[in-house]
Length: 207
Ligand SMILES: [Zn+2]
Image (cartoon, rainbow, N blue to C red; front, side, top):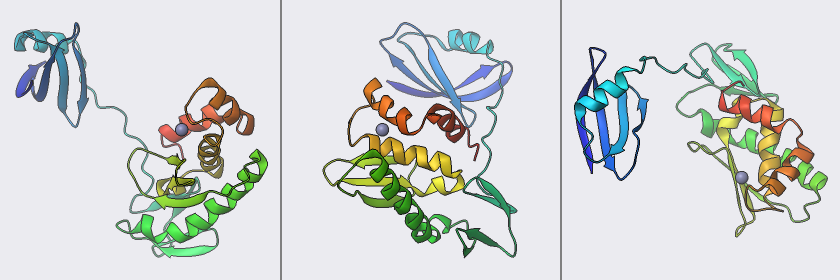
């Protein structure tokens, strides 16, 4: 059962989407000034307002932007626009934020393909993977066993080459282990000892 309402928290009115469930405690998060709350059946509005009033309203620090009107990160390097062009592996691309990820696709794919072949060789993977580059939300890469295909997110173009390598290694490690078990991570760490550090940078948009 979901309910949309307004809550008065510390004298400020917030939109809240409340979901009543069979659970013991209140759980919530805030996105774009909207509280998303899950709470036990029968929790009153006043109770929620009191519980959340302990929360000091602050916006989460915003992640750094991969590009603005002035610059764009390419392979971890901040490039200030020079007449709107960005340089990618020797190619000049006219920067257009609407079509950027489509525009860079062929160049990025060439680059990823080279790294993919390199790590296939290093990791002893005999059958070459098909490669697809996509701009999707929330996922950096995937490995499809049935089609023997690795998909890499074109958003990664903003990140340093060692971060991109770590994603390729992760996806290739799935050739040996489908899940994310400790055995899987043993393989990842073998080829990418600072994997955790690179993942941390990735999540924080530290290009
Ligand atoms: Zn995985």
